[in-house]
Image (cartoon, rainbow, N blue to C red; front, side, top):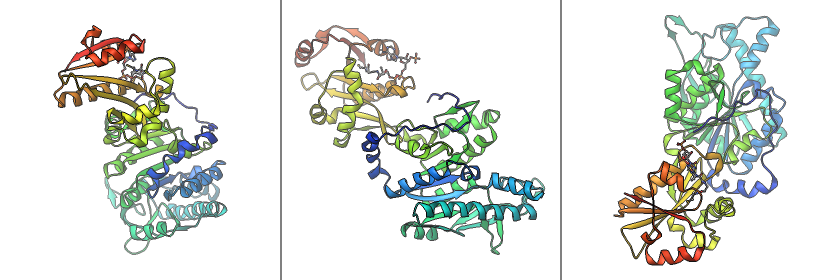
Length: 442
Ligand SMILES: CC(C)(COP(=O)(O)OP(=O)(O)OC[C@H]1O[C@@H](n2cnc3c(N)ncnc32)[C@H](O)[C@@H]1OP(=O)(O)O)[C@@H](O)C(=O)NCCC(=O)NCCS
């Protein structure tokens, strides 16, 4: 998938959702209802002026039946405490050595941040509880250096967290775990969020950060597969800034353990969280397991969406007009391409009853935002493959404006309209659109 433009570091107000989009949001409700989203909030986001809006977004998620678990960081707060108290810290983010003084500040910073979250959720009449649900073990000695009070996750008490969620209580998880002796250990919050998501079988981890998304080589990546990200991280770690490096590593970790999607969203952006979840393009970065991009057969539930999707192409005469009823009647011919549960492209495959060795591809449409990312080609390749499986030898496509896509990109050739079966030829003549007839041997 292509890069988005580099986004400025300053918060941007994006009021992308209009009241008329509510219908669009509602379509997600049955899909997301009952699912668990782990929101990982950086300490600096809790301190940001947009935090109040973020809490309202969380209230919206809850009201839609999404189960939310909050994990927070303390990076900014521990640095502030260190400066104000003039106590040097051994490490700020829980990845290096945590000495006794740093642990003490981490506990104080955690209490402060958790309290701010508790207070904010209370203001939004949401029930919540700070938990001791993270069992930890000391990280021990790494490369000869004792990590002291830095911990790694041993076990997440999922019964406890599930109990809270099922009672409509939002669990708040601090970046401090408890060792076998009950003593506190500092844990990195990005890692913790991934571990919590794995333990709870969450469907998303959403990192709320002070950055517009995952920045690689100075650009914000809007979406990237876990394989591509893993390869980039291995071969070009220098292309990641510090924040992106940590989020990327832990996103990979989360996806490898079964979390299907990880989002990285600017927590300082008004409505950022809601727009990321409830708009097809999103505003942050999406890291997905490879099976997320999928072509599936359309169902009756997709009819209205397919109609709206193709309307613009119909207006520009790129596609033949089809009423909702016509789409519904022929829904078995439609395949759709989904990204993160949004349909972003469609194609039809029609088998001629009077010429079984020939099939027709039609209604190929890719949302403009997703152009030039190989989606159109994948849809046509897929349709060709299905046709071949059914014993079809040749496939045709009729196109008025995109015929060169078929010829120069997909290896189709122009042919005579007489190649069409009789009934189809009649409909062709009657339409008056005079499209070019393109054919390919399978
Ligand atoms: C035509 C369409 C399906 C292409 O989808 P897409 O996902 O952008 O295409 P892909 O990413 O798979 O392929 C991109 C390649 O196709 C080329 N391409 C895209 N549209 C083209 C067109 N109309 N004519 C010629 N080449 C085209 C691109 O230049 C690019 O070439 P490159 O790989 O050499 O850089 C899409 O533009 C679309 O939906 N258009 C509007 C509806 C339409 O015309 N449908 C066809 C009806 S038969």
